[in-house]
Amino acid sequence: MRRSKAELLSFKVRHAVGSMAIEDIRVSRESQAMMLRVAAGRVDVDAIKDELVARYRQASSAS
Image (tube, rainbow, N blue to C red):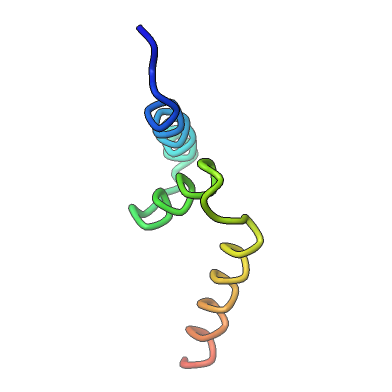
């Protein structure tokens, strides 16, 4: 049975999330969606990294 590219990417992301769960790392649905977008090539890793850093800086400056 052949799997579509989207199904294969989804499987790989779920596999990575499962591996992280074994190490007691919880991955939010939002983060899983980001991982899938990166894996599919729809967004650049550096763009996601910059977004996360900006969000962290904003949250830490608000405290």
